[in-house]
Each structure stands twice: as C-alpha cells, then as structure tokens.
Length: 91
Image: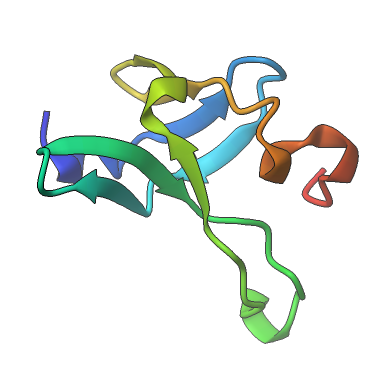
C-alpha cells in the first residue's frame, strides 16, 4: 500500500465509532525507517467564512492503529487527551 492510498481512507476510533477524518500526513522516523504515527486534522476552532477556521492537527501513534482496511483505518484514540470525548466540540 502506498502513502497516497492511505490518504484516501477515513480514520475511525474503534472505542466510540467517531470519524476522526482522513490522514493528512505521516510522522516518520527517517533514521530508523519506521512510521511513528498518523496525522489527522483537528476540529476547526472557528467556523469563519467558508469554514476557514484554523485547526491543530493531531498525531495518533502508530501503535494505536489497530486495522487498515480497504476503506477505513481503525485506531484506538480514546485515552489520548486530544480525542477525549468529554472535551470534544466536534459532536
């Protein structure tokens, strides 16, 4: 599978079924040649004109990726602070 193929897949949290978005990028360790994590878009801070509010990207560590399917990537992001459902304003 190529990186360009991964960017077409939706990332879903297996604990609550929330769609986290599509992969924006990969966090790579070039010296060791391993993937450290996947980068997904954070929630928009402001609706802004045409949805142009800035958002902070989130990194899901690679060891939290549970399954890569044909149309979805399943991750366990429930106990990561940035995906804590109690503080999520994307619902």
